[in-house]
Length: 62
Image 1 (cartoon, rainbow, N blue to C red):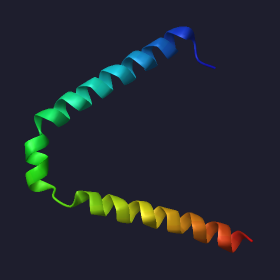
Image 2 (cartoon, rainbow, N blue to C red; image 1 turned 30 degrees about the horizontal axis):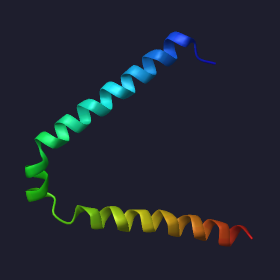
Image 3 (cartoon, one colour; image 1 turned 180 degrees about the vertical axis):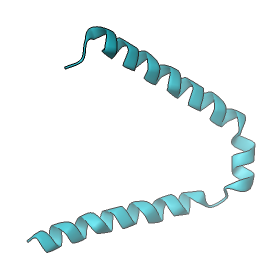
């Protein structure tokens, strides 16, 4: 499906992306805490909504 070179590139890219994301997040952590207070609540509501959709889908399927 994928060549060995493509897999090596994908792994290296993922590692570099995660390192860059962590570095940038740490740099902007103080700004995030000031401007995005309560953002975790939006995430929780979103995840609950997705779970509700899955429950409704399985309920209506039977």
